[in-house]
Image (cartoon, rainbow, N blue to C red; front, side, top):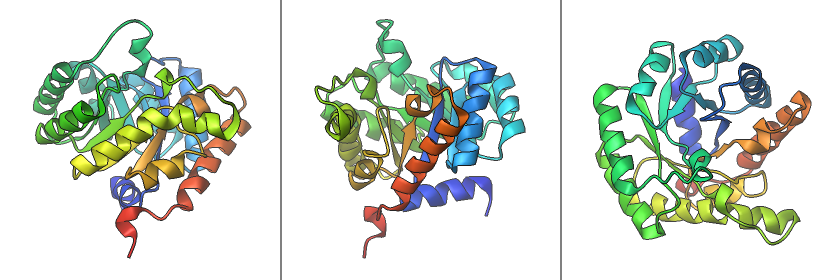
Amino acid sequence: MTMLARLQDSLRRGQALKIIAGLTNFDRQSVARTVKAAHLGGATFLDIAADAELVRLAKSLTDLPICVSAVVAEDFLEPVAAGADLIEIGNFDAFYAQGRRFEAPEVLELTRATRALLPEITLSVTVPHILALDEQARLAEALVEAGADLIQTEGGTSSQPSHGGTLGLIEKAAPTLAAAAEISRAVSVPVLCASGISNVTAPLAIAAGAAGVGVGSAVNRLESEIEAIATVRGLVEALEGVNHPALRI
């Protein structure tokens, strides 16, 4: 089974785990640490900034599929030439603190422009959580019509949990879980639930209809490589214990 075929199989089973180094993270040491944790922890694929040198670095450390993220269509060209396996428009979380908003028309136009530049590569697109849920679902449908192969949700960085422990983890993930539930009913392509996801809420994402989860800061903020690997392994095990709705008899 090829690398991308394994990814497709994981999505079909609801066990895909994407580890996200960060769209604005160009620090080679940080990215290398995240790549190693994803590889050794058993993740399905990786998401790094759209940078050709980072792609070459990641390819030297792992055989996992490499996704690159950007918010400018032309920024994908060099990383794809360097060997990126798939591309992601987003994640947008990194920009909200700067006051930068991504509205539906801009995301749709960016998707069309990206697909025109790269008509063959697997394309994932993040739906901005700043939109109402019904707007997110409508945008997701339009994105699929424009050529998106995967849809990703977000929202964890803007949620404000009022409790600690397990309840706090669920509160943090609530926006992206809600988006996954709405969008997965609206589109036929796989939905990846990302932003604010933990080993507690990863199974909830799959139950809501997602085909997998994306996890960033819960792994890439850890200084200890052993801790990071253990966190990835915990997420893998959480997903392995879920019976994806599409596979139920």
